[in-house]
Image (cartoon, rainbow, N blue to C red; front, side, top):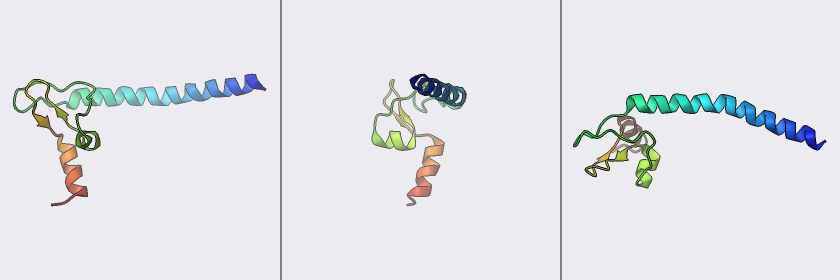
Length: 86
């Protein structure tokens, strides 16, 4: 009984890993390809960004560690304008 539950859980974890790992890899590759450098100093953003504010967490973007410029992605600007028109 217990061994059947353990086998079922192992199979579920394997199925999730088979589907989720390629998606994460594709997203990391997409993020690496589409990164734009800082418009002020030209530094590339980190591959995995850690948001500095709630706004960056929700809408994307990053803060340049070299010059401190707050950078917003084009997608986040369009998305924010769609939800919060001026």
